[in-house]
Image 1 (tube, rainbow, N blue to C red):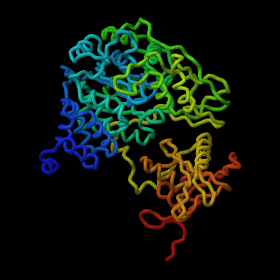
Image 2: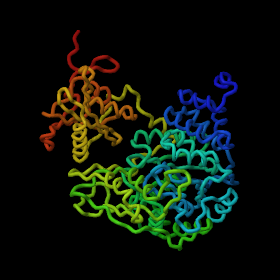
Image 3: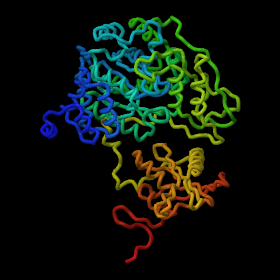
Image 4: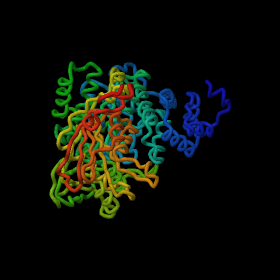
Length: 597
């Protein structure tokens, strides 16, 4: 109300300016902007500026709800006589994520209806519609009436948002892809939920991914997004639950378009890679439990596995493809393959998974501009998994691409892979659940409790990986005055690692220690629960007093590992409480040791 009084004749430029300056927008202002964009009175350049302002400044919870409602109100909905059986799933996107192709027919086998409104690729991640369009004849542009007919006849449908179904998202979705605003939490929340609310659902499960191949790089950021999605969905009357899943390597073995359809069919034959099958079962079981269609998760998974292994899910998928004009028996495109081999012996330690997705875009399997035509036959096949030991010359992956475009992707592919002498710690596929009834329970603990946090146990492989990260960070130190380089690596309770290097300054008192750089980076990313700190210095020196106190603010019992680069196999481990027997406490001012009196 205050904003509308202050700006009685608000125009689009003023709305953009206010958001650029970090001011919250009213529901009327947001609705004016969205309605204008759909009508064509707000131009792409203006919407791009506003989207970037949102990306940089964020939105309040009320703004996010208002944006979701405005986008939903921009078009029609898939109204149903009985919505109790309507459910859906949405993923925030990852390399090789083809679970939607399997889940829609699988859930329909359980007696549910799945009116899945999906999207195209965003940035390096593939899009469900792009994958399905590699099936000859398959239509993803169904009208609202056609969607209803397919649901009535088959029980499931996967299509794009039509001109009269959330048109605001259809326009904004494509714009975000080419303006580097894909990763904005409010825009993600409004995009996902406006489409799902338009389906007139009774329940929604979300797959919120984190890691090197996801938009959310850390588990903490993924949890924040999952919490926002569950909270907004629940506030708008939709039963919503979310899984946090790791995306540090492609899901399954295939990444691309046609190759992912082929792998989805393998899963629906009771075959295919175990990680893909596991995630499908976890997501589908969550929905069955939300709908009270199974007494427990074990029963739900057994029912779902039966539909996969019997071929019933594949038969339902074939029925859906036929109803949408596709021919599942027609040949799907696949380019010739060539291998990328290991340059040395060692463990596959890490993958820059998003870079693998960018490589697929470079090969023609994704878009760099709105309207780009895709080559559905390109893609990748992962032949090894994180933690596998490989030998020099062993094929790591196959690349499906025409010979004349292979060179575009080779530098990206080679730089995506790290092979190490140390085996990595591999995160579990399903890391956690966020449910509406648990939002208060899973909220970040009060600041007063942080120093009392008991760090989780860190195994030897995790410790060695952390030491290696600290040694690498030491090489990046800026120490032109002392030449005393220090590197630090901090492992958080969520499994993320944050590194830091000491940064010296001509005014020596302004020098920042590596340990504080790493801790500050973790806190800035929303992490305040730590598992272990590794510090690499010549002589394996312990952190200075300031760094000890800085770390004690968050975890007084933090394990601290010290390593000398000249003897990397010899490590010394302490508890922070042993290194700092007396510390300043955030409430009493001082705690531990002898207090003068």
